[in-house]
Amino acid sequence: MKTSINKRKNKRGAGMAAVLVISMVILGFVYLASDTFIKLTFFNQSMRVQRFSSAAAESAAATAVSQILSEPTFGQDVTKDRIELGDGDLGQHQTAYVQFDPDSGKPYSVNNMTSDAVVPGYGGTPVPAYGAQIIAVGTYGGREALYEIILVRPGITHAAASSGQLILDGHNEAASIKTTEQLAQMTQGGLVDSDSVEDKLRNTTVASGGKTGEPLVLKGDLTLYGDAISGAGIRREGDIKFLHGGVAKANSDVEIPTIDDIEAYDPQGLDGTTDLNPTYADSNNLFQGRNRAQGDLVINGDLEIDGALIYVTGNRTVTGNIKG
Image (spheres, rainbow, N blue to C red):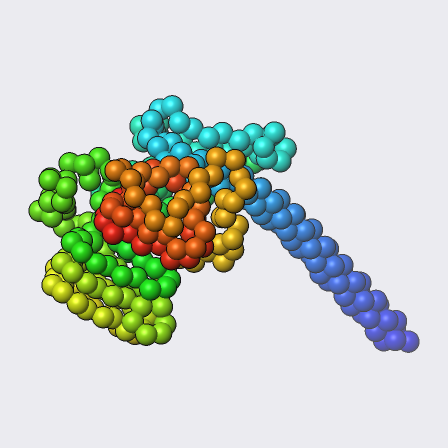
């Protein structure tokens, strides 16, 4: 009988121990679950702060790009030019800025849009010629985020280009220059002094995107400082000189910017539009403002363009040089 009672006591003790062990496991699980919930809540809050500060920085960077594209010298006055966005521009408690002062001790941007040389930027990043490095700083909830954009203005790769037939005739030198002032300094006796054209500006091409026949015709006394590229054939007549390794490339892929809706540029009926005669000859041949020709247009002599639109429904022929 005693033996039976002792057995029951032993079983009861074992049961209490099991309950204690299970309770400890449950409490431990609850503690771990609570700790995990706290960590997840903190992680989600951190992600939200990071997302909002990054969004503010992106907005400031986009504003800076728009400003520089409309005003290429913006940011070159490093102590004055600055972009600041606050509650009125962003969400509540979001702020952002773009500044250009390298001595400020803060992240700074570099506007190199008007220079033909590579310069060092923030963090030692090379800023390309005719480009800009935009570093925007966004803030939310006490956390900062940086957003960087490298802005590059593509150079003009063609000295002359056409989506149709392009005929170069007479005494021409196809190269590139940066300003009309440089052109005036280069001009001697009505002809361009080729020795004053910098080597880095000579790598230009003439191109036609035509796909049939001979869309590119080279005639007369012509000097090219690059390649002659055609989507089909190339006809060469006269004394054609290729300098700086230039060659004729027929049946090539030609990348020429296109305007899908060209009719949208037709100035017909707009105030201030000048109607051009089929053959236009003037001592200056200086075009400004809106100009329109119905049918073909032949310009005898040089053509100078100063902020002008010349809309021709047919073919346009220029017997002299084109500048502007």
